[in-house]
Image (cartoon, rainbow, N blue to C red):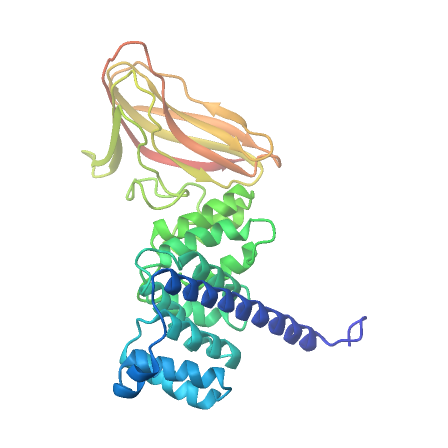
Length: 379
């Protein structure tokens, strides 16, 4: 027994019961919304004569079921409304009624099927906020969450937009979902036939980074991206992937005036080529690092054609943002070995390694190549 006289399993059951009540309240609100929309659209219940003349029509079956429900004949209502749903799943009132019955019975797989149907019959998005709130509450409960994850594994069309708002809800005051519950959803979708795309898991990573959860974000990115070198000090030093792979991989160029691509070198290696107009201020490539406190050495080779206006920079993120070190332009022909030494401290939990332009007043095009990147700890 706990100090308050209630066992841990009893507390868990009480929490689950409260969350089920919250889910039912959300479903009820959804039902009210659907009825109001039908009234505004001029829809009315099927008239009794229509039900009698064509009782096998799904609208008639549904209305007969609703009438039975109002009389308290739940068994007859379930049979009729279930039959109406099997004939056509496009009536939102039917799906909402069945959704409520599934929640009452603890049938979370069935509940998710009806929630999915509601989103599919809502082309203009009028019901989406209410259904998304329902999914948030389902995501918050350990009992109902597995059915939600299983439905999301089939990659329904609404998965990306719901995951985006889930990250916002997780950090909103009074939000239905905690950051750890959002993590359970996202990590649960890391495998399967339809794993999450970078665009789908990026909002979750952004949420973690905004909270300063750098190490956890890095670890989760490794799981979600399937990155074999996620725990390396520097990832992808040969530029196999450029852009759209998350904050811990090389990002693409943002802004006008520059382009990047990976090229083969004469010695069989790979180099990053940067073409820059010399005057614009684009955001060039970089990647987020999570280095523990210590001293480090970053080395590389570079070749510059044109004025030297591109340099490497390391800056600190976190409670004490600052530039740790920045390279100096080197105006020399051919390939040159370069190096930067820097030190991280406890108030620097994450770092950004990035190429930065140094624009001049006039355009003067630059082509630069960077290869043989390496990051190591110094004694």
